[in-house]
Amino acid sequence: MRRTIFINQPRYSTFFVGSLTTHFFGLFICCILCHFSGLAQYYFKGEVVNQSQKGLPFVQLHVLSTNQFYYTGSSGAFGFPSRFKQDSVTVSLDGYEEVTVLFDATSYFTIQLLPSSKRKIKKQTGLLSIIKNKAEEDNPLLFETGETYSKIVEHEETETAKFPNISFSLNIDKASYSNIRRFIQSNSIVPNHAVRIEEMLNYFPQKEKYIPPGGIFHFESQLTPSPWNEERRLLFMQLQTKKTNFDFLPPSHLIILVDVSGSMDMPNRLPLLKTAFRMLVNNLRECDTLSILSYGGGVMVELPRTPGYEKEKIYKAIENLSPGGETPGESALNFAYEYAKNNFVKDGLNRIILATDGDFNVGKYTEQALMELVSAKKEMGIFLTCLGVGVGNYKDSKLEVMAKKGNGNFAYIDNVKEGEKILVNELMQTLYVVAHNASANVEFDSSSVKYYRLIGYENPVMNENQQERILEGGEIGTGHTVTAVFEIETKPGLTDSSQLLGTMELAYQLTDTGAVQKEKYYCWNNYKPFPSLDSNYVFLAAVAEFGMLLRNAKYLKNSSWDHLKKQTAHLLTATDFWKKEMGELVLKAADIYEPEKKKKKKRRKLLQQDS
Image 1 (cartoon, rainbow, N blue to C red):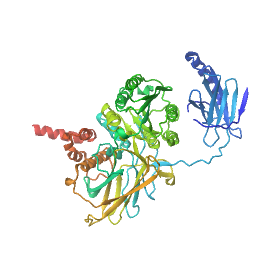
Image 2: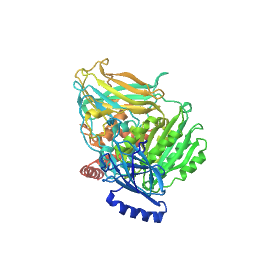
Image 3: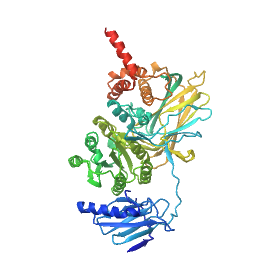
Image 4: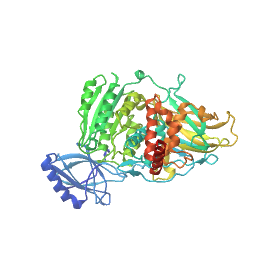
């Protein structure tokens, strides 16, 4: 029997389907699989066409009973197995009206899609920074080894007289630093595009600053010489949010969405996450609730919404997580958002915590597709935190774009200590947002500043026109500090402390009302020589230099690994664990990155001294 369908209904959304000429082969394979698995007994087949009866390729078919996804082939034909003789399937393609069809295994379906009457909204690429009226270069996504990182381009020096304004997103992502640490501790070179200097600067805990009652932010700036270029100066800008008492925060519903696919079956993946989740459970209050969803082959509810005081029940669910199967990331995300919507806590925090190596291999898995999926869901008032793990097939680029588009944040867990830092010590910063869509616009005074260059906050470069690009603000958590460092050239004779270097205008949305707020701060010529600088700024300068050396940045005039080792030697005896660790990482990185000729020369010198 042949049926032609013309039905218009709502949308859902990925996986397989061949052309018409391959249907019989596909049916043969499916029958074999059904014989052994006992899972599928029927086969749906047909084609999707337009008004001219021409086949439409890459049409999505969403099987509603199983939440599985398929595509039409190049001729518009489809065929896929089913456990049911009849099933509802949503058929969709960009630019066409969606249809929901009741499929019957006894019929061959011809489904005609009609052009959509809705005006298509042009997609825009969110940026980390924009220099007003200055064009950007184009470059594709970069792949390094088995891991993926979005390609970024170092900021150039900009002439203030021509382009005095630069805007950049304020976000609390910290994944880059712990990922860098993983490479260095494994005696490996760090991929250039894995080094995001703003995430390195924002990784380290900062001293709490005084914020007057009713205020949200503390701002300060500091001017000092550049340690690696005597012709330039460093201008630090720091913004810190007010720390909220954990006991006074509203109740939360956290939905852990954990990848339990086959790729997670390694000690530094699922077992590491289970340890981190147990530490998170220790921090839950009685008013908080937690759910655990898993995906590996399919999507499962491992633990329905459970109060924070039932810790033993939650521990047991975590312990029962085991790896196996494919990685249906798209289905899992769709399911998690729907689950969060159905269990929404009014006037509370609703957040999905996605934990994975990012290796999606079923469903939508390109960066663009995942970006669109998460963007469509974030208006539900549900936040997304992405936790990355793993080595080799770790997909940094996917997790980064999902976190940015999902009103969330992004961290990489390489060891138990990092899990404790993210999910215990910095839980409030990670989960509780005080400012949405936060961005800073810095306008330099051309009478004081000749050139400027922002260190970090580089854009992942896309193949789109500059006119289509927008700045995408970040989410700032309670008690978090955001640091920006500019390398600038000041005008000759700049000695008066009352001279203005520039202004920073902060724009953000209030979490409760969504109202847009703007605050303006001033950066004065408060120059201090490097030796008399506050130790915190000395440390941050070393962090920036560390990142630029790892990236082999072109603006490091007089820097070297020996220079950085001298700058960080005092950290080796620091009482602060994280600063001491960075000092050790610098030594290890220097040994990895130094040319072999230089190493041999040092060894000869040591041998001569011993003799």
